[in-house]
Every structure is written in C-alpha cells, then in structure tokens.
Length: 375
Image (cartoon, rainbow, N blue to C red):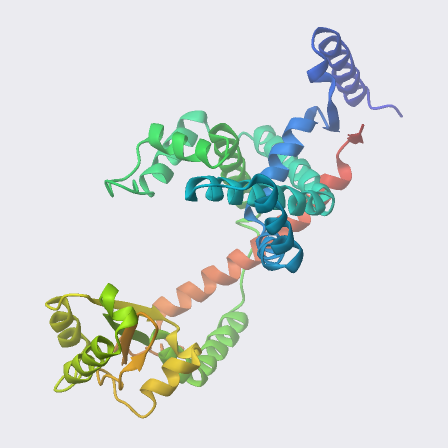
C-alpha cells in the first residue's frame, strides 16, 4: 500500500528543488535528501573543512612531509628561483611552501573523510527531526544562552577577560569556523540528548549486582594503580641559568654560570623555596614540566634524589639546568564499597552508559527507516 503522506512530502521536496534550481543553480547542488531535509555541497565542504582541522592524522602527515627530503629539496629550488634578499621575503616564501604542503596533504585526506562527513550530516538531520517531532527541540533563545556561556568560558589572549559573544564570533571566524553552524550543532546535540533521556531515561534500570561489581572492580584497580597515579601527579621543576649573549663564545663565563648554579642548589629542600629564591635572581627561568620523567636526561639527573632536592647542574648550549621532583602531596583516597556517594556515582555512570547504547541503537533504527536519497 502506498504511504500517501510520505509520497506527498517527497513530491513537495522534488517540486521545491525544481523551482529553486530554476531560480538559482546553487540551490540545485543537492547531494543528499534525508526525509524532507537537504544536504548540499556547501554543507559537505564545511563539514570536511572542520574535520580536517581536527584531524590528528592530518597534522602528523603534514609534520612528516615538512621534514622530508623532498620538501628540503623543494625549498632549495624555491630559494634559487625566487632569490629572497631579506628575512621578511624568506619568511614569506616559507609560508607559501607551508600552505602548498598543507593543501597537498589535505587533498589526499579528503576522499577518506568525505564519506564520514556525509554520514555525520545525515545523523545530524535525523537527530534534529526526532527532537522536533517530539517537541523537545531546544529553542533559539536557549541556544543563544548556551553560546554565551561557551564564549565566557574562553578568555581574551591579551586582556585575560572572558570573551563577549561578538569577540567569540570573531575568534571563530578567524579559525574558519561558522558561528551559526556551531550553534546549530550544539543545539541539535543537546536536543537529541533531551529526546533520548525523555524516551529511555525511565526505562533504564541498574541492578544492585552490577553496581557492586563495578565498585569492587574500581576499588581493586585503585589499589593496584596507587603507584602509577602518584607518578602522574609528579611534576618536575626546571631552573635554568641562562648564559649572557657574550657567553656563547666565552668558556670562562659559562664556567662562572655553572658554578653559580651549583652554589644555588645547596641548602634548598623544597620546591617553594627554590622558586622564591630563583625569582630574585636575574637571567634565571623556572618552569614546571608535566610528565618530565619520560625524558632520560631528567631521570638520570634526579635519580636517587628526594622531592625538592636539586640535581647537579646539567649543561646545555645556552643555559645550565637544575632539576628536582615536586610531588603534589595528595594521596588518592580509596572509597569503601559501602560509601553512599560512591554508590550514587557508579549508578549514574552505569545508567549513562546504558542510555548511550540505546541512543546508538535508536539512531541506527532511524537511519534504516529514513527515506535517504543520494544525488
């Protein structure tokens, strides 16, 4: 039996596309129709641009290309051909080469990402339709409030103050991100979440057995990971005694700076005292390094030393460095399995996980039932 309602909607979409195609050819560049909603080439290209900007694989491929022998050879050829006569001209030439490499690498990534972008856009349309149909679509007023909160969560690079909405729009534009597209994406995702919770929230239940199993597992893994979690909290303090400009060619000045660093490290036993004393000295920089233990030179320097006990001076080309371990001092608390607060968190986590599974399954069902036409 023919579904007259669906047939009427499809006919309306076709007629609309026909009229728009006559008025403006740009509107006729439709790639996918999802029920009554359209996905155009512009949508796909914008989504592709955003995905490329977030792609870690693309950044790694670009770095590899920059360091390749072929790029070095290309740079030599450009220099010989263009013959820059100043530092500014050479930098301009470097930017030109970098932009060319970026375009080439991005072009090779586009085919594999285009399919994923189209699927994301289809899912976005289906989420929007489901939320709208069930009257849980976030209002534009609420969406604007969310964008204001998002803007205020970012700080101005110069003033350090929270960004206004106008400043946030300008910052997004400079990064090639459409404010309206981002707002629409956030609006749809939040509306979809509201829809999913309204549909499945009351259906999801977690058994006491599941809660206790996860709590016991969490308690066991916590005990095993106390050492590693403490290591993660360790920061390395680096104190650098910078050589004066002339010292780069003066061994006597380097030796003098080395002795100064060696004298500085004596009679100090805490990171706070080290930073306070270093701040009073000229040409001395202090820096905290996260995950510093992954560097062999630092591990060797602080081996066998206590927290706050500076290492022997380590010589570099432009400075002498001292290192020490600075633990956070915070001990990881193992919460007992009977703790009500812990139990509540575990229950909420399990429910969220169950609802997430149902959301994926429901989106898959919507995709199967949808009238999706590729053009």
